[in-house]
Amino acid sequence: EHCHTPQRAVDELYRVLRPGGKIILTTRFVYPLHDVPHDYFRFTKYGLQHLFRAWQSVDITPETQTFSALGALMQRVGLQTKLKGGRITKVFVYSFAWLFDRLNWLIRAEYGNIQKTSADNAIMTTGYYLVGKK
Image (cartoon, rainbow, N blue to C red; front, side, top):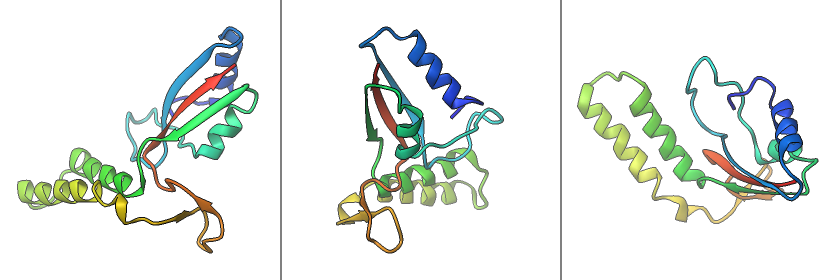
């Protein structure tokens, strides 16, 4: 997310890695701006698959589940904002973050579209872990 030209970066990683070598990386998906002004992209798992399409194998794992992502966003609100109401407001924000992180069990199924015809998992994750093999 911090590279101007992610495809060039992935291609260069592929070029310098020995045959059979592996790369391990993480990237953000649902996440607020950070490290500004050097925060350029967010990648879906499908975008990562496209970026790494030349690799022999790519394993992509969501970092969090949907409600945990909402909790992480609430946590970032507490960390990256000045809120009216001072400490009491921060307590509420962090309490919501803590609560959301514990609600993933409520989700029975997730879908990649609003018609609920395309089943998918972790539709709202904070990011992905990727292991690629050349």
